[in-house]
Image 1: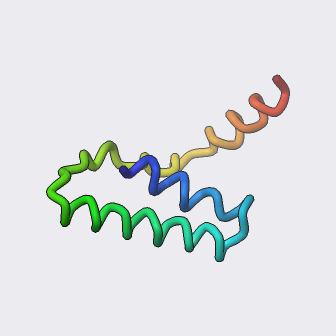
Image 2 (image 1 turned 90 degrees about the vertical axis):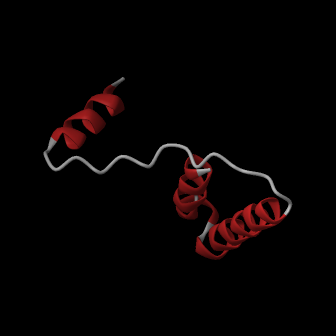
Length: 66
């Protein structure tokens, strides 16, 4: 669930904010329906924090070169 939620949050850059917000709202609504029906969803892993060093710049630069 957390990974799907994170994808829907990140997609706003491509699909524009209103569409992303609508998709996130629909997803959360679906989760509420499933919970009401007795379905127990596994939350999944939390997103990892952004690194506090400059490694992400190096990784991004290297990724663009390949």
